[in-house]
Image (cartoon, rainbow, N blue to C red):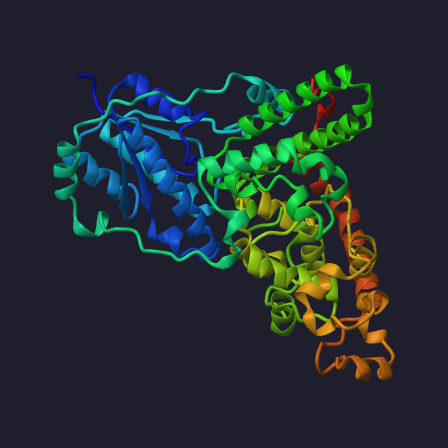
Length: 513
């Protein structure tokens, strides 16, 4: 029999379109392993909601592998110590895994595992999992590489897998220290979990319902806090834990676009509907492209999780946060109704549409003048679909510390007028304001005192007055940000950031062909 292969699952918890699984399967019998790492479980960016998605994904993966003759071994401990112990009781000749761009802890862990494998003489095969390119020399040509990867053939689901006998696996695991093979803790799912459930089947269900029904109004409704929960794809948490690959989503969108063109030719009266679908699918495909584009930034420069793009931005905001402002923002008590509604909603549901994510980060960075390194961890814990490569680069982008992006200081009042004019979202999540009229919900502090008394909501008692005055905060931030952006351009910092991270070409016109 061929030598045993170790298939190391990380954030790629699926059996379809899985290159390491295919490679290990071709090389010999395999054992699939997932390691619960204490340093990740207690990390500053980890929350119960992430554990829930992981639990669902591992449960389904375990069943999928078992149905094909393999077993998922779940172990607990620090790497590479766990692999070293496993190798002692179950010698394996190679490690197969996907390349992973995650947080600083996983970056350090991967380096430790590679060093151990090299010292032990065990080949380690790390394969690309999306459009992110490891050891990228230049951003020139990256978009074309992304297209090539997305259009390459999907790897089929294996019909069966060859694995050591169950009795041999059980005997080997029994020889491991008790702490490495303890059962995972039970987690009870809260009521908000339905849209955010994990697992490969759930991921495909969400993708198909989006492409067949829910996604028609995606382009129009994606910014609305009321319409976006249903109109958006909701596959972001699946992409984050790898129960769905970016390539699977991209190719499914292309198939749907092709089917729509065929339907449009057959039914001329469906042209308007097909055009709306086509626009939404182009927007969806562009988001998949940007998904990898931002992760590539962290892959190229892992320090962006904790450091500014350029030193010129160091000291821009206080290193120690104003805790009153930070707590008010976190708890949805800023006196800005849409901001507060978004933060309260996010804490419960684990999701916000992109426009609202950008707004709450912009508000924290510009209006409250808080450093993204203090506000970013709050959002990281609350986003069920937390993806470090996207998260930290977006935190900096919405804080104006990239040097190359447009300074966008979101006006929360304008956002409310455009995306929640009737106050549906605010009334749901800030119920103390629910009796106010739609116009008063925009700036409740301007509601006449008599009206406040009649509705039973006194601003300053039942709901806070604005924590900072909008006009003054906006003017201060605009002056400071434009000055430092100009300094970044003059010093050459902005050019250096662009050379390393800037988008060169985005071939959107090719996406649905």
